[in-house]
Image 1 (cartoon, rainbow, N blue to C red):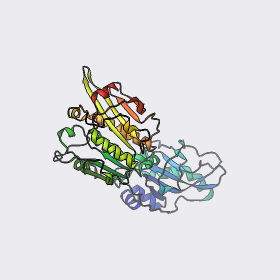
Image 2: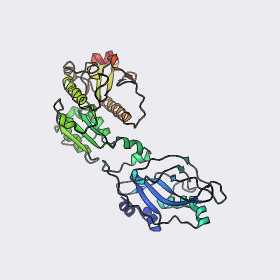
Image 3: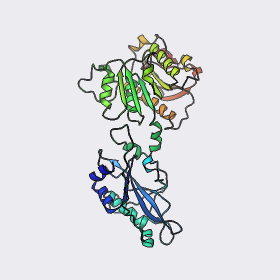
Length: 415
């Protein structure tokens, strides 16, 4: 990455040629080490400037804003006072392992008066070095131009484009909590296809998807993405594999139904999503995942038409490894043939499929520690009529199951 970025960005090349200790962190930061400054006792210290990289494409970058991060103490003037004209304050920033020696302690803000923005990275680094290092250079004759180069190889990434979103949001450490997950999505229908769309944008190591159906016209109205000529009539697995394989590695979608004999498909899987519409098949899948000790989330939806419009619920049920709460036998979801005939005429709306998928993925990321987890119960219901969610324990018997689900609309309505 070092050679590519330097060769394609003249301002970065000039920083290297002049002797700045330039490096690039895997989390999409420009790092300039060996920045001298004076501490409170007037002694010379060295810190590092860190600035966000915004990727224009795979090789060209630009600034995010006029601010920087600093790994080091508070820089001081020759008179012992903290350096003036530096806004910001104490902060933390998660860097990748490639920059483990760079511990960000504060941010600085010094905006150019005339333009409010630096012309390029060279102007930005020069300006901050002048402010931070000026006193140390004057007192000790030290220099920020050490010509030290760290030609780091980027850490392996599942993405085929650089994940600049994570660094811009400063959540590199949180995203890393998902990196070892191998996730299975069982069912690529309305909710399952939206779930896949969201999941491919996470840094999970591998995604395996399964669906034995074809992609027909009605599927196009309940699936994300642009409909391309020739997709109709292909398998759902083929359609979605083609849509996302240029975005990331580790994506394997199969034209296949999952049942109790599909043990081999789940070797190494750490989490699963069940997004199917047949109760008997769901029962087999639940038994399989519980026997394998794989935690999973099962989603469902039940809508019905009333005089004022549509009403109903969506469901997200989290089953921990080994099913310690006995959710399998709590009759929370359809496990038989009762709901299958109804499913053929069940009302499904794309935005609710998408919302069901969003809630399911957010719950998964809570379980991984990405979001704070304060959910009080494994069974989450969302009521369409008042747009509220309620978490319940199995004893309540609440259900909502029709899309990618299968239970009776009346059950969902009664809940």
